[in-house]
Image 1 (spheres, rainbow, N blue to C red):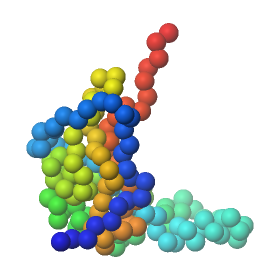
Image 2 (cartoon, rainbow, N blue to C red; image 1 turned 90 degrees about the vertical axis):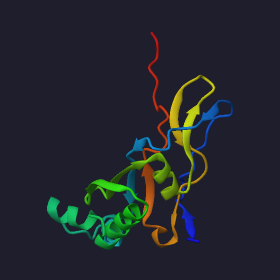
Image 3 (cartoon, helix red, strand yellow; image 1 turned 180 degrees about the vertical axis):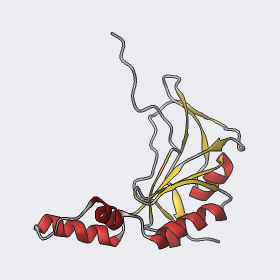
Length: 158
């Protein structure tokens, strides 16, 4: 059995009340995986704070902040290993967008995804508990965006 670790801060907490409804396991979703900053970016941060950072061009800065190639390859292999398709990647933003069925995405991140209906009757896709990844990705994957699709803003009547 594969050893898995939780992604820190990934737990989706829901208000008391409301209910859960099943989702079509074949429904396609497209979450975005966020990869850690490379070690060299931390070195730049320390230099910046100490005042010893030399001026650099935008291209140099992007090179420092760009995702580590080994981390990117590990995330891509993880996604493909779970039957997900890599549909976009942005090395500068350290993101990989994947696509797959709700069932495959849920399995990849160790959660069951379903429809959450909150106490006000608002329905959205979400999950319960913490997201997990295989132990070899511990610290590499820092967030997964798009699995908790609850509304974050509401229009206010006048």
